[in-house]
Image 1 (cartoon, rainbow, N blue to C red):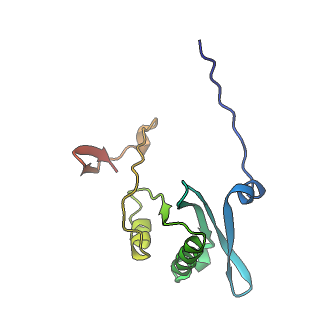
Image 2: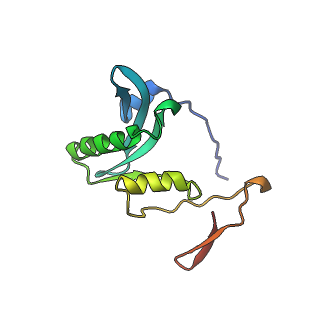
Length: 132
């Protein structure tokens, strides 16, 4: 019999910085957020986290951050940048499309254990039907 166990590991900013890249988002002199990216293969980076303080959202800061990040990823010699977006978050989908994310890269499937999380809206994709 195979023994399997799971161990939870807490990540800290210092641990992220050791293997990933974390940039502070600075507007004038103030830190207004951060963006955390990691390697997703030899030529691909993925946005793991992006956070901008509420009062600086919807003012062009996020777009500027993505454009600056794109330059940095290219300077690192990478050929692609990915981000995960929840399909029903249409505002995020619109944002990422507006800044140049236009290739579907991966599909993440989820199973719900709480009926309150279930949705009725469906989408047909590659001959499969999924709820979004």
